[in-house]
Image (cartoon, rainbow, N blue to C red; front, side, top):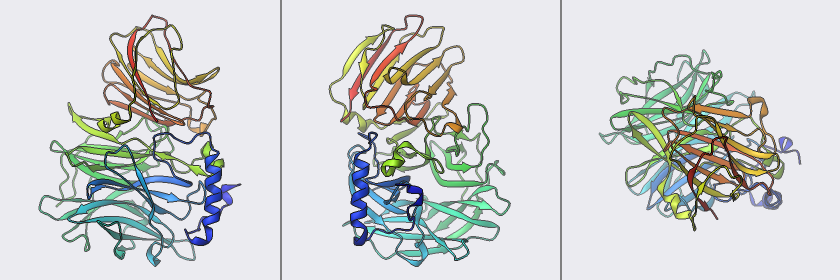
Length: 484
């Protein structure tokens, strides 16, 4: 089936149940279904939304179009978890069923207040001439999982901005009022974020732009988020239209953050440092964070990108979400680490001292942790999902303190116009690696979360080898856990 010709305006109704079941049958034939990542039962998954802890468990939604791997009429799909590891699916929670969201339930956020989970999102509508008209909408979930009637909070856009105005992220201020950031585009086609405040989560006042030192940094800023750690303010967003710069900004669109002083809600000013990418891999976009009950900041991202195709498309589905990560502030920098709860998935450990004797491990869904006692003077490589010429290479250059992810020979190629190699420099020599390898993805955490690479890969089923290659007899200790 040519999914690009599929009707993008289909809604979930009893009348198309058979068609949905047929698509699920095609999905089941895919050789690249993930083992331990959140993925759609059919169709397309993209931005994580509404991520919040409420009523004793984590609630996570994601944008979803059920009828093929295309950006069609978006719904919100709902999942819950008590431990960030095992997720229970609840199906479509928000559907485009009112006039103000009739062309899609776009991205947004969630916040738990008393005994309700308030969800905020952008309702997408289009006029007959194709012009977009955005609405900012709230939908409130009760503790029994039912929803109250949707409320339209904002219609259209403020003067001076285009209709690219979306993705509200709401948080509570210390004085029991609320703030929100919304991604926007100025009429001069530059990206920006607008700040709003409210005393009741229903009536919102625009405070103007968040004042940064990035007046012309891409043409649109999507999926904003704001949080604070150790008296620092972190504003994260996904800018579109950034030119590549050496090893930076190599993907079609980027995701990152600026960090500095806490946001001044009165003036909207944020004094900050350079924009930093969250992830140096090929497939990472639109992350969202929440706070755990014990005060940790947890991040989940979309393991994919807009406006690109993937090998799973021909099986009727596309994309997955990253593993949840804890954000830590250490030595003036942010680090990302897999949440500690993931250790619950570990089975029996394979432990070994590993040298350059060749392939000594295999697997297609596992966690691999390695620690280096010393490093050689020459580059070395770790190959995963290897069979014959097929392999994904993780290479380290000790002279440049640079780590490189190479998917040139990872299997079925994808989006090669943006290159097949990603690289990043480390602030200190490589000391450790944690790899989470799934059927069609890899997530690499280097130097205790200093640097992260997230990428989709599409190898053959028989490509399971794990091999070290070095010229200097490198020895390191490794532990490997299979994930079911």
